[in-house]
Image (cartoon, rainbow, N blue to C red; front, side, top):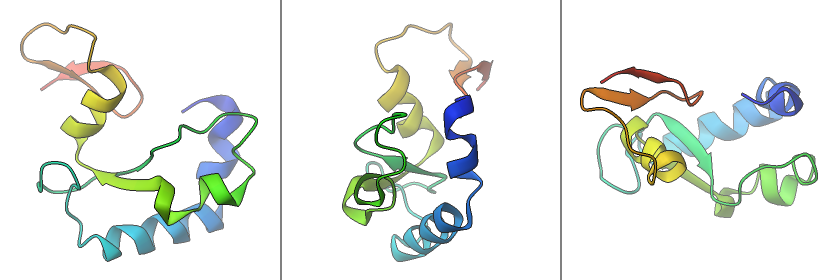
Length: 95
């Protein structure tokens, strides 16, 4: 997590929004149908837009993804050694 985003992701507003969206999507990844894990922002958050609820808390900008689909979204063009994947912080971990 980027330092400038830490307070947002720990906020009650984000936690409530994320949890409600997860339930709304029945816990399923919107891309592959597997178990969802991460509520992803389609328009990536930046220091300039993170405090704009029309971007950061807008359900039209959210997508529930599994870990693999989230990794593909953020690291799809980056080659990894077989048996490894990126975690939610972008670190290589065993698959």
